[in-house]
Each structure stands twice: as C-alpha cells, then as structure tokens.
Length: 246
Image (tube, rainbow, N blue to C red):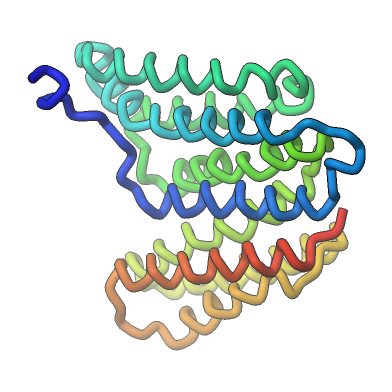
C-alpha cells in the first residue's frame, strides 16, 4: 500500500525531456559515424550507463527545487533528490573515471543553476538558458562515451540551436518588438558562430521558422509552439547526424 500511494516526482516538463533526448541522440548518431568499433573501443555499456545516469540527474531537479524552496523542511523531497542524484552519479562513475578532467568545468553550470533556483529565479530567462545549457551537456558527454573524444563544437552547435527555443517562447509570452529583435539577432549570431566553427549552416535550417514566426507573429497556443519546436528538434537531429563532421 505504501508503494501504491507513493508519488514519484518525475520531471513533467516535456520540452526539457525533448531537448535532452534530442541532444544525446544527435551525439549518438554523430559518434557512430566515427565508427568507434574500428578502433576497438567498447562503448556500448559505457554509453547506456551515461544516458541513464544523466536521466536520473535531470529527474533530481524537481525534488531539489522543492527542497530549496522549503529550506530542507520537505524531507520527502530531500530523500527523492538524494535517491535520484546518488543513482545518477553511480551510473556515471565509468564515464567520470575516464573523462572527468574534460568536463569538470561544467559543474559551474550546475552551481549557477542551483543558485538561481535558491533565489527563486527558476523561470527567469537566464535560469532557463542555464537549464538548457545543462540539458544539452548530454551531447558532448554521450559523444565522449561513444568515441572517447571531446567535441566542444558539438556542444556549442546543439546548445545554440535549442536555446533559440527559450527565446521563442519568451517572444510568444511577451509579444514585444524587443524580444522579436532579440530572436532575429540570435539566429544571425548562431549562423555566424556555426560559420566560425566550420559547422554546416544547413543544420540550422529549422531556425528559419523562428525568423518567420517573429516577422508574422500569428496567434497560436503555447502547446502548438511546443509541438513545432519538437518537430524542429527532430529535423535538427537528422540534419546534424547527416552533415556533422569532426
């Protein structure tokens, strides 16, 4: 009866899951194109553990938020956070043992996001961009699990694309000329960065919809915006998988 009544605090922010899954899928496809098996790399078990570990860590977000808001008074949230976090870290031990020196700097993202949560800024645009930057970390980490190589350009490519979704939602909510200009400017900056990193601009084709949407500004529900972003994410994964080059 205890387990029947237990409510597991799963993260129900489906957009976050879509970004996370799309990021590691893009990395997985790009990594497999390198043909790591030809070098004798045993990447199967390591990759599965890495994806599962990251999934548990992401799911620790809700109980962490609740624990911070109640200053640790909500014991159930604290216990759920410790459970998700400990299982996630345990599953990540193999990848951390092999490559922690390459990714420790990204712990600053976790620290800054925790500080924003503690300050009650969970839905501030800076916190949301910070959160997306953590979700897209699954790309370079999974790519490393598959290939044993660090691909920071892959991280930049994935993060720039999906962060555009944060700004688009803000445009829909605010409907101001300021945010519309920011969206257009962001797309231009993303294209410039891709060019500087010698990443195919064709991978950014889905962002054309972002520019069109701020020019036309038709009325639509946020659910429709979310579905559109999901479709664009799928197209992005396919394009990156086909066009990515080391």
